[in-house]
Image 1 (cartoon, rainbow, N blue to C red):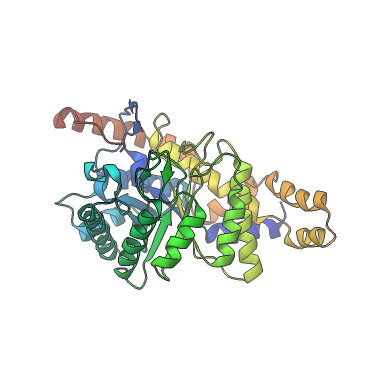
Image 2: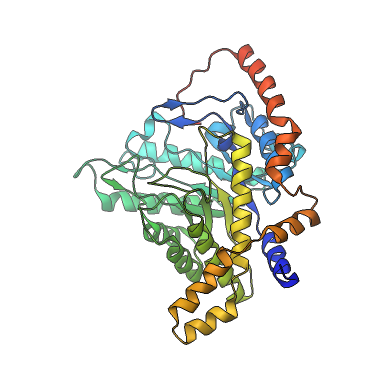
Length: 399
């Protein structure tokens, strides 16, 4: 591999910071039940410890997203949690309010017809924003399960206006350095209509919320065959792309390892981002976040695999020959233009990744190095003992 290609990869990866989710390290499951792992995290300290291992071996991922309801309780002091994260070599990333698990949200949160429940949801978001300020988090991420299951159940227009009001109120509580990220999802758990069902709805609601609101794109939250990179390009051009929740899917929101099903799609998304960077000369202010919760794969190993896959695909996207691509487009040569992408996608970036890892003191094979560390076995022994002392879990929640 030429030195220029190695330098391109190094520049791209040096600006590629990934946030990993706390809930990706706990025992999780589906609506049918949980599949338990001995080494799964029990509490927030375990999750931060596991996240620290991912960052130690894979690099690029010093931030940990937290879910307020799952990670904080009445005894959790934000400043203490921030120090705890630093002890494990990470920092607290995005703050995720929980607006779907409580029984009060049976008919929605911000879209609920009951004003008292909307206030309850709004108060929780306000508390989450204050929590974010205390731990110096720059993103508050909002995903809503709101919607209806049957025609006529509620007014879609009235629900839209309720969302506008609540999102504006949330935006007004932000600190100057904070961003409100509005996520969308076409269906589940509401199946007739979802209040924020696609990127266009999220775009409009974010604009109405205020200047520090942006759209969050979850790569699993789309219908089959949807062109996600077009959505990314459009939002980038509008200055409205705030962040990602990266995962992969075969059908819908499957939460599979990034690149496990369609690595070319992730490459094409990264290509649009790096093309925007090269065209404008500035790095876009995007929060790159992982949203995966593996039921079967070992938790830490799956997260390392995801980060390494993301690094590889981002590196490949950095190798697209922009000048050749521009020239091919200028002469309307579809084949030559497509080949510019295919050559980069099929390029062997192993030498460049190895050089970048060596430069940053990372192992050449992160997964192998982690397995040889013995952390998984030690964590499993410790957590088996602690679970035995705690007694049976009440169970029930997704995470």
